[in-house]
Length: 304
Image (cartoon, rainbow, N blue to C red):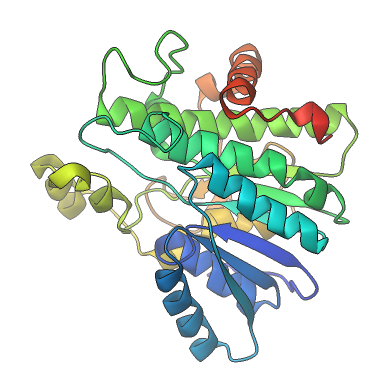
């Protein structure tokens, strides 16, 4: 099991921290001494997670804050409160997500739900928190992508899936977008000579509620193929599934634009892996970043 290095004195924000890989990452960061903010859509669930973390680690510093990545107003409010407090932010773990929503849903701002929750929300959060991150001595942004990113395609003609909607294609596009955001942010940090480390991760095939909560939106049910695959494809629990993200956030040899996943693709301890070829297209990544700025109304130029 990966041993998280000492994190005393550091402030970490973990999105989707009430369950799955987010809760596991938050627990282990708190156990290593970090002051952890559980950024969750439902505060009651966040408080339950906090209580469980404190039961296991009574001296841990853990706060719960409401954050709905499918609502840009919520993202702005969350970021503004942290900025007002003025404490440098050492670690931002973009972990929360939704997958395979059976029919097209929209966020509070009218974005396709998977693109909005998985990419545009985390993009807005990351850019808004850049002032706090850049005030820390060695800040990191660790963003969770997915194996599904390898099958993704950035469709600039229909980013919001208004013409044709496919649950799996929308998810793959959103997770490819996450990885391209990670790599482009690393490039921007280098161009502006900022010490920010932007690193990506994927959890392999980890057993969480991600693949069941999305398909049940709108009264749907997980598909038979998903249920069958869960039985025959190698998988692992959140304890191991969170390790690539934890390594991206704290690993001593993580490099700008690095990418980590399980050693045996689906399962195993974390190791450096190669991003999919499409994720390395710098021209597409730059265009996607520009589109994200336009959609969210937030410019990185104002922060760097």
